[in-house]
Image (cartoon, rainbow, N blue to C red):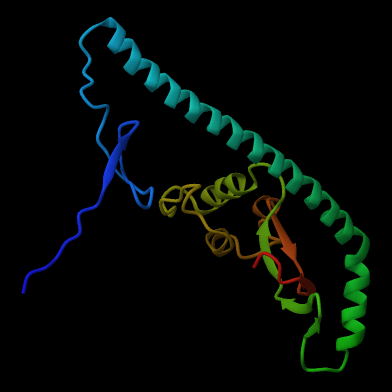
Length: 196
């Protein structure tokens, strides 16, 4: 059996081999018979480079402008969303608590989202001040003494490390000045399902 392969009719346009029937670009073959051999042909090639680089720079500038505009739009919408949260979060919290009172389920489902009440345990966290973690680490190092200090750096220290070294808030007020106690709470979580 012999295979019959139909020959594709092509033509060269602008340095590209193109299928005459479909218009599909098959490959770049270059300008027929063109070679850099003098200043004029060198300038011609460099002009093509400059044209392509200018196109790329134009696209990059356009991308930056569009991205900047989209970021500004996102910022405006985020500000509007923040104001909505400021205005309605307390009311949504009260409504969810009222609707879920006495029920085992802790989530209220609606068409446009859900309101969930989640319990969090009491805990210690870093205080909101600048360098709170670094200062707490220094207090722990002083408290443990140089012979008992494990190699503790700001990168490896954890809140648990600090709490182990200073277990009593009343006895170690220096360390606990850089920590904050967060009591147990039941907090409202609002989900719309957008941007999961």
